[in-house]
Image 1 (cartoon, chains in turn blue, cyan):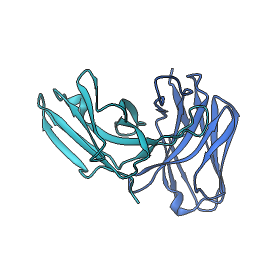
Image 2: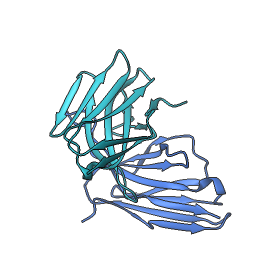
Image 3: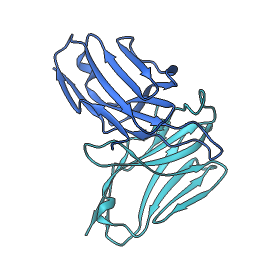
Image 4: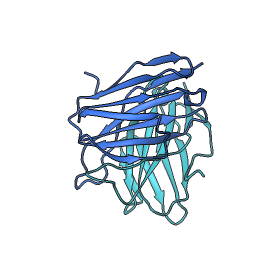
Amino acid sequence: DTAVSQTPKYLVTQMGNDKSIKCEQNLGHDTMYWYKQDSKKFLKIMFSYNNKELIINETVPNRFSPKSPDKAHLNLHINSLELGDSAVYFCASSPNRGRAGYPEAFFGQGTRLTVV
Amino acid sequence: DQQVKQNSPSLSVQEGRISILNCDYTNSMFDYFLWYKKYPAEGPTFLISISSIKDKNEDGRFTVFLNKSAKHLSLHIVPSQPGDSAVYFCAASAGTDSGAGSYQLTFGKGTKLSVIP
């Protein structure tokens, strides 16, 4: 009954390959995110989708393309992988903002991508 | 440019004592602050948050203090327990959300807390 689940947990691939990371949330949230944790341990937002619509798109190479088939899923496809793409990628989701203020984001367990 | 800074990469505390984790920020537009806890090979888990209209929020053993004039917040854990050993991330969000609750969190680098039995 995992709330936010990502697959795969580990991904090792060669430079130049295309790969996808899948994310699903069963919390009924309307908003989903992708964050990247680089080698310096910084967690940085990449994308945000609300009800399948792209809301936030930070400065990310266009080799990265998020796809949201429905509001419970936000997949990340990466083309022409490069060594610098090696990182841990976290999917997250949050409910819509209510009177309580900003709702907290719930994170998946992360996908460790290693490009060799 | 780090907008959220956690200057202590690690902290060791004896079980039963108080743990104090610090966080500084530079962006005066931040109006909501959160602490996340992360175990190895798991995603961050929300711990506690505070709005900029408050200076303190308490939840059980966890208390977050916010000093807006100093742009500083801290997380107090008392009493500390071995199960609290984890990496703690401070995060902040600016005043505008991008739509229907879609908002951007800016994270610090984290502080690894070790609670010694």
